[in-house]
Image (cartoon, rainbow, N blue to C red):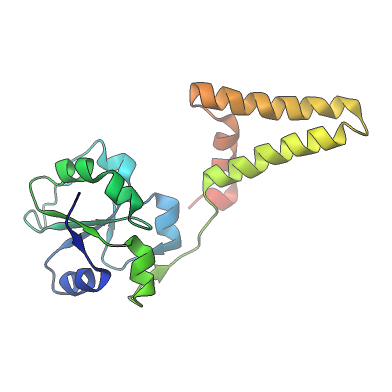
Length: 172
């Protein structure tokens, strides 16, 4: 477990230049709302690379996510990747930061890709199942949607996800 700092204490130390603030959320989350002065390093990237910083190699790092859960669950990894500087966790994540009335930057946010996939796959299955009541061949649409979900679960490759990620609203 990483030692914690309150959002107010984190803000004060950030303003004084005493810490580095690292956002471990994913890119689409960061695009929606971020903390000025924080640096985005998604958890998926941290898992493969240490967090060395040429500008401030000795400054403690304060990690945060949306609510603090991801940071807590990955405390051991974050501590190892902190490259020898003291790591901390901000209590409550960016949600607590906003509740405290501290400054945030807002951008255009899109719905997370995983939710888009759920909606699209669910729609295919629902339309196929209900539509087959009037026209039986539509049942194959439901079968196709269900088979795609099973294939994605087994292989880790989701063709629908690839297609949706290339849609204009998901490009930044």
